[in-house]
Length: 600
Image (cartoon, rainbow, N blue to C red; front, top):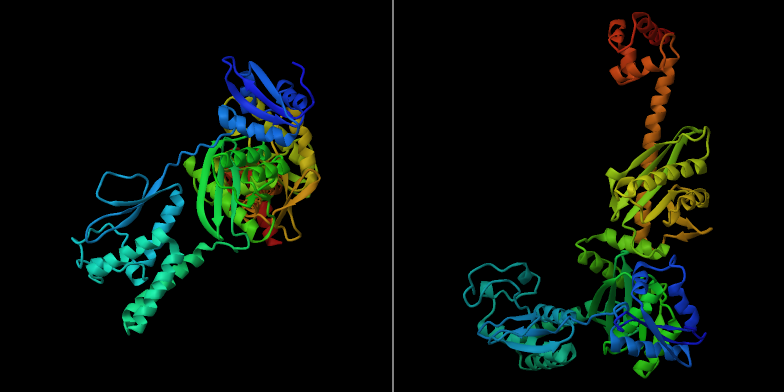
């Protein structure tokens, strides 16, 4: 089929005639031909889709923006298998208020057929949980598992009472009437919001004060102060952008997590996340995810902040503005409070992604930060780092350390004795080490373990020279793994990573900086430790072989028997004879060598 070089939408179909993918293009011929040419630059998901394409259609449009709008409509209509789709299946949540003399308030996910009162439904589990938590703290309601009235006055109050977050009915610190009044006020707070509650509480406080009911007025004053504290905690960042949505996408190479933080009136009102298969293109993924998100009948705020640039940013802004019927801007903050907000969203996405795979920890956030900084497709769960060490060109050695999921994986560490040349050449040493390592990979890759496993990232202790020295080796062996150098400052501290003739500063990404620093320190320690051991052994061996009648074989036998030169020095002739291969003349020569020197 001859395709025009015009904007439009294309529909891929399988052998059953089902639409399995919908895409848009500025130039249909150029875009569609990419699928059916070389598959070298195609991701696994795209290759699988192409294998299932039996036919395709296209629809011409007057502009790329029209193509984007039509693409959105067709994706929503057909829900194609290979498009990025977000499933809005969180369900609803409710606020539950039990009946009786001692009612309880809680957030629940379903409405039961019981005697309780239910407020809702609400679409945001996050907002409901937060609101209930606020109300319980402000009105000092119990959150323990004690049952009332059965447990009223039967125990001492817990810590929550002493920090003014519980009225302690368990210790008889509040009457039943006062408790029920607190619950009624909490329900009113949840129904009407803090603003209406503040107005009512202030009115009642002033009325109590006018009636000289100072104890009652003081209690109302304390509740007003509690609401103020809650509201201040909720204002996570400056209200200079009162309404916005913040997006971040984190991928581990297999799965990706989209996290969305929604703000209104400068307050965080909702947090949502979605787990999907990892996309091939991060920029395209952000565009698709945002479009899918707002296609689910969500209100579009005036501002949408992202953790990185989406593909077709201007077109996406135009589509959002058209859908919202007002101006919508897309921002990628680089500094200040807005950048901190995006960073919070990204860390949340990383934590959710790890939780979904059964992993947790700050290492995940550091790996996600490093992946973003280096432009990697996913989090580098398996990192190999290399360093070389020598003394003025003698006893050349190298070390390889492995960090798995952000922590040292010591059983995979390897040591190399450089054999290809004599003298000092750090670049050649690094190239030899990686060549030997990846030749082993080509021999053992069927195992998927040890040398048979490819790393997600290679880090070299050094700058552009080390990187340029190993790239030809990797290219020759067909190894496609990102390679970066770890650059130190004048005080031997990690400063940046070297790549593509330039440097990427680490100072702006604190967790990534800490991780890379730890890797550089560990590989340096490992390589230097091996070099010192080898150099010491070499030096000791040289001192023994200089003795008449002691060659390398007898020197090794002596070191094996006595362990240290100091022990050899203290041994008698008879004790020296006990070492394998030692004769009495040789033992006397060793004894005289050390004792004559001591007498001089």
